[in-house]
Image 1 (cartoon, one colour):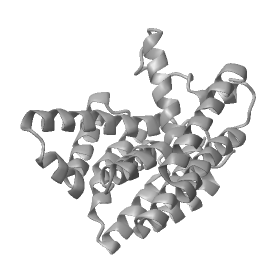
Image 2 (image 1 turned 90 degrees about the vertical axis):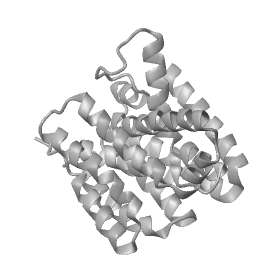
Image 3 (image 1 turned 45 degrees about the vertical axis):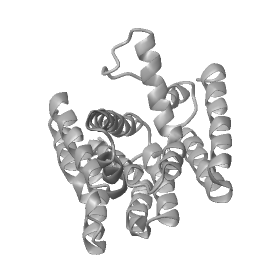
Length: 265
């Protein structure tokens, strides 16, 4: 048996170094990690998990200086609608991250690239999280000896939400979303397609592109490498050419995904 819940390791590392650096925002994601750890051992109701996600993202939203200042300048009705939109979108990112944690190394590898990009461009206090994820990847790579579980995937999703919400400009927030698009886009498109064809979107399935690539005979490691390299290309394109280059390469990777979806998956 392969043990789950191994993500508790990088949750602890991230939390300890967040205390050390005085970056408190990451600690707002701990309730989600605790519920995720409990869910890995005892199956919890979906309502409790989503309530915890909502609580977590609400904390992140109202403790984001630039965002809270922007919301404060809006009309009350528009501000409420905007906050509801942010909560729904943020919990979607957390769940999409969780959905994509279905083969060895894919989420861990992609998150290494995303948080390394963020550490290099904006906030070096995230390097300990990158290092702990890199160490975890050795155990999580195919054939995996340990899984991160919900404690790890939902925590990473919440951290991703946190850095996007804390962006100082729309371009910074958009760039992080686009760099994460190989994993978030796969999950989002899959949900839309399943809803369109009348499937229950909350029911477990194996219809994600990465899952169908594995079922087509491609190994876990090769599929994970494909997603990791795609994420890395997007990161480098933004560093070298800004948002315009990033948009071009995002579109190119979307076309690659469409080709894989039609011809191989």
